[in-house]
Length: 403
Image (tube, rainbow, N blue to C red; front, side, top):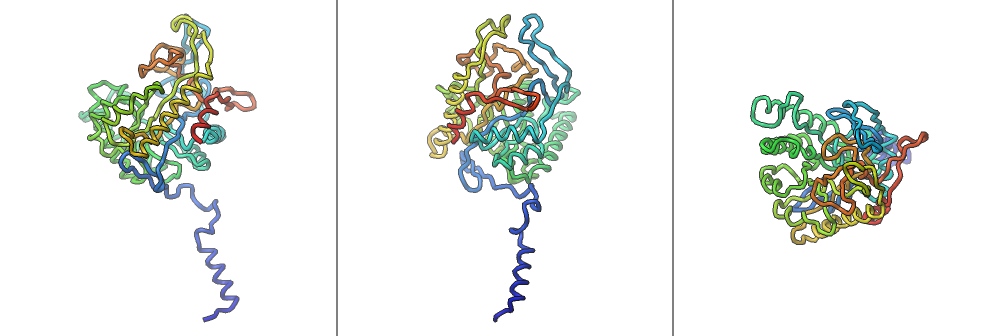
């Protein structure tokens, strides 16, 4: 049956008005249904395709900034040998990680051909929106306390159970806010909590992680769940079966690229995918005695770009081997440590002055680990742009490797 031109025009306009595809972008919420993520064996898939994590560890802080409690700010007086530390109270100092800074930073990260970031503290909407606009996924941190203000930690006592339940409630409430955001890739529970609590508490903490992972999955059944621990394949092997809700393990591994020692031991410990949640070496080359001439030395960008580039390439090679189902291959990517320098630190393993502790036992040619010199980008604030950064040679190297 034929219809008149007027009726056909009316039907066309009606379709235009009711079809969601014709809605303007401003009418569509940013919190749309996220893409499906799946773990099949040792591999991770996004939208049905194999996924490789080319991530950058991102905190976004600048000179003398710190997010506040529980630690303060310790600044290195590099010209002093008698009073090397100037420690301020918790929460002292500026902390401006607003949208302008985040956009500036994530533009630099995307320009290196990275496809995601990993955070330690909890994300906000500005960060997620900025990441989504640049096609970056976020392995989103979930803060976990080592103990509460009364010294109560993980365990089976009534106080410990209450402490754990409170931690789970806080984490689930946080996940509930952002679970539908398209930038979220995975939730990463804590960071190296197991080495900051007594060894006798570790079994209770690992049991808590399984409870937390289950609670997160009830709230958000779409995104993946992991936890970040210091490199310890023995711990992975011991608790792998006890954490069935963990989609993949995240290990902080600082390694000699000529000897990726973690490949075999991790494969013996778990068949789950592996995310190298921290890796990298700093840029500072010491020329003086570490204890009374710690300020002597200079940056060695050539070595820095070379060794970190080799690490990134090793991880990419392991991803390729994993995709080809080669022996002992479990890795699906990682997050290089880290985006920019930390001109602050307060804990024994990473203070704001040079020290002689290499936390993973590998002393590179530059001898000592200086976390405040770990950045791909150097902090170079100006009056016109207090967020300004300068790329080290490593930025160009990663851009090549990740293309």
